[in-house]
Image 1 (cartoon, rainbow, N blue to C red):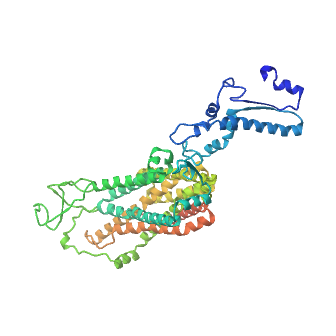
Image 2 (tube, helix red, strand yellow):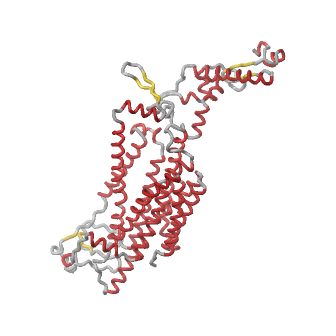
Image 3 (cartoon, rainbow, N blue to C red):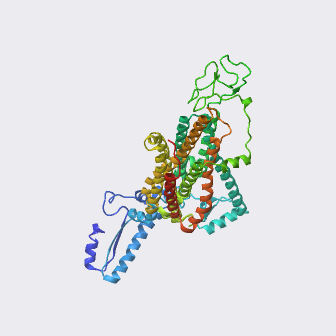
Length: 563
């Protein structure tokens, strides 16, 4: 029209109420303003074309409906209607300048907003509304046609499942039952293996090796936890392994089974224990007959075990190096439930105080850790886990849970690092300083998280969780080792160097200390879950902070430390 000298300036001088609309492909200005194009070109430049298509397929244009008619004609018509409304108020005409690229981009505003919010982050064809959800897509029918399924709302999804499955309630009950049994067995095995590991460590290692072994145990616990939380933080759905295995849950279970299998094989192939040899046969002339021998044909040298000579080695005790008496002269004592309860009831006061402090520490730690991802999703990200699964609030909550997994990963990594630096730290501040510092930093960290629930500050303060984790795995068991070492020295001085095998064992005390973890889990699972439902997740971090600060006082005032 401008080429015919009929532009808006000229025509509106003749009629000021004139509404002048012009529609182009790329706009009136810019490097593409003089370029010809079609619907698919306008879609490509607006960015919308990259989001249309199936997973693993090339993008395709939905006929010429979106850019030509939607982003072009529809937006131009909308502008004319708005100009008519304005003219009724001011009496003046308007110039409408619409183009298909900008109009299409405007129509896709919801998509770009969802991308910025993290609600549409999977590749093309793997999101909720682009065919990635099995309840919002098309299916080929038996007669060669297609059926469109759109069951986004929970009530419609239930109707879909009811039509596909004869008795969905029975299937759901079986799924819940199998899951509960699996979780119970898995949790039982994972938790109760910790006590025997420490008991075995205390039985076969010298005092120095016990301390080193506890630090290694805490280091690898943090390292393994970091790998586990990392698996939960990664969104496997848009990766190839997620598509092959079916879902992100299958990926996590696959890696868990792989790690378990590898560690089991390594354990079976590790350094074997030295078998006992019959003392009545093939006794070296320098060996006293009252001492039993360990076969050392393939004896490995480690820690306090002396280097094998002449094919035999004497097992040495950690303190005085006394030879173990002949087993035939020892009296075997059977542990019964009565004797076990008697030992527990007669526990010395300093052991009891250590167990109480360990119980307080684990209660505080579990109060925070078991509900941390829920806290991130609800309080920090303001999501809603109870809303519909296709709602914005639920997707925001899931995003918060993923970020919470990254926070737990930070906790585990820092736990490993702190375990590495504990040995030089203990020479400066001692076990009391380490114990008190772990509880104090955890209490302050959880308190600040509860007061200032910000994403970045919360992730930074997750390092304090790592300090607490490392402290709980090392310091109490170091104190157990020191208590027993002190008692052994006193008994040897009182009895002329002989040891009574009937005294309480380190393995039993390690087991009692480990039981505090299970008691804390029972208390947290039974009591804190009720508080969370009543008051929300924020009560968790406040409770954890308060318990940790109480633990600080208890550790400083009641736990006995041995120099």
